[in-house]
Length: 467
Image (cartoon, rainbow, N blue to C red; front, side):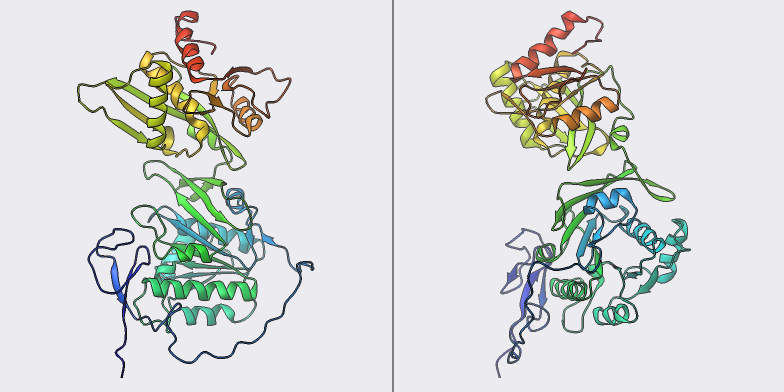
């Protein structure tokens, strides 16, 4: 009789090893390799002779849609992040740090949908029914018709939600607690997570119910488990936030039915999550307008313009290697901006420490922030406060040229709405609105921007420049 084979699978990245090792060759993590039975679960070897397949019905793309394609929740920020609401028959994966508010967000969404007459089932695998009821009472959702269950077995969950009328939304909190009888490994392992997720997705596609799955994250901020789970679902949302700040950001990183760069902004309170309709006011609430080294960046998150303050501190150092500390931006991008300032503008920062921070714990991933970063660095080095009513945006190339960016009109409109009357932007921007009274300063190169900031001291000795 042949000896049964075993596999050793990394619980962080899903890499399969032929034998146990302390360090994974795929991701480099230590003590993440666990022995699992390859004969159980999805992706296993052929344990028995395969059965003959049955033909399925082929249909055309043109046809009537019987039901509404989306289920709006009534929570504007959640609907914005998902592209207008949950799509029927889709599977959504939501990840985030422990205690960031994932269960709170989903409980509020479940209550909002139940008030609209939808059938919602909330399955908790981490908390008892009494604990979930306490959260519902705190959030004011105890009076809704949300159906609740505390179960971790996949087969039992599918049998429960299949009884009676088809649910419109099913929430599974979380996928790491699921276990199936078809897999022999422990709950939370790669095989069990993959088996549970595929069973839930199969149910969603067959019935048209929306399946929302909650996933844990690793210390690097990635959703734990095999990356194949993110490919299996239709949408992946990350619930982000800094524990030192009271706001939370729901960021879309994958969406088969909508944009992948939208965000929803919430504010955490003792009554749950409150929607923030204008996040720019939130990020600019504690701004010091007279301090050097601060510039307001007019950015875009999907279709939403967001204004955020960028803070820079340039200080002389006696160390052989100066420090470069960055919070909320790409450190490689900062190194490029410093190199361009030195090569094309004659600004020597080799004997200075550089500290860069995006106010409010916000993270910028847009190249259009280059001009705001450069302005803040020059302002801090020269000790000149930038104009309080001016915003900055534009991409800087390695040659020192300032390249135009998209959505210029939306950035300027958001800035004007918040009381900013001036803007420093790239020359020849394609969608620049005409006939506006705004004080625009178009620059075509980074040396031109540095000259404007340095020359503002001669124009306004008191520090109140006009740009």
